[in-house]
Length: 302
Ligand code: HMG
Ligand code: MG
Image 1: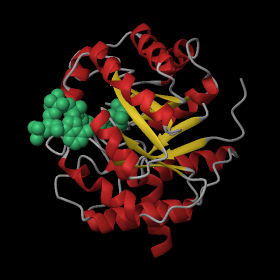
Image 2 (image 1 turned 90 degrees about the vertical axis):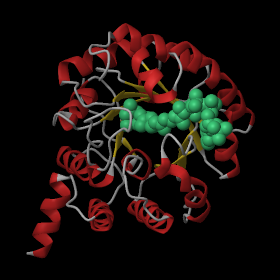
Image 3 (image 1 turned 45 degrees about the vertical axis):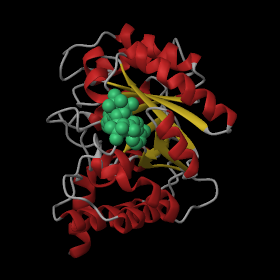
């Protein structure tokens, strides 16, 4: 199969990227980050998470962030909503898309959202119905689709089973997520081909963390089998609070360098993303976890 001529990049840095930071990041910094990303040309930015602040304290400012970002018409600003309480908050905050997040592994489901996979689907049912009622896009995310920190191997059929259930709930898009970044290209292709039997491939996305350095290879492998939506995080920010040792999402700058080299259209301005990455890294007081971001910044400094 030839590669897609165009891909959608969902920028998840403001949510997946920042949720794991220990020091509280002021809302103004998060808002400036989202505004810079909007300006760079993303059409979908995961900006907030309406979860329990006891579980993920960093996301407690999500309502303020959603209220104060400069929204560009046509851009989808997404928020995580594990239950109806989260949905009500996302609705009040004007989220364009809500994300229900489950797992392909029972052990991870328990640690991350404190219930079994079956129970999570029941909780999501109300959220899904409410999203449809309010005409809000609904996305489903499946953690540990290529391996679990507690259970180890995860069979492709388990991922397919959750895809089927999320499809029944009416998800517009479904993310196949490598939470701990252990997937490798052939495995990724096998899982993507398996789940594409359950859900239209053009609405499946690859959400890769780069823990073992395989993320760009996995993205390329996914494109070879027809996936055309990918998640990434500016400056490679991130890690999941319930997946010890997992590093950030693949860095957006690296993904854009790959796409630009392949001639695959993203509609995003790499230079502006590099600026956004340097901005947030400076605030966090560390170097960006992006090869491309740091290379371009070094070249500029000359
Ligand atoms: P629980 O303790 O079972 O829930 O947590 P509960 O219903 O018994 O509520 C306990 C308390 O939380 C109550 O407060 C609720 O009001 C409050 P209290 O009465 O004790 O003061 N609460 C909430 N507060 C604000 N917003 C809410 C909310 N819900 C309940 N929505 C729950 C269950 C799901 C809430 C909890 O486990 C939770 O918040 N988990 C979130 C975990 C999380 O955010 N993980 C990271 C995101 S997932 C991810 O990063 C993976 C992804 O990137 C893909 C990948 O890479 O794999 C998407
Ligand atoms: Mg993630």
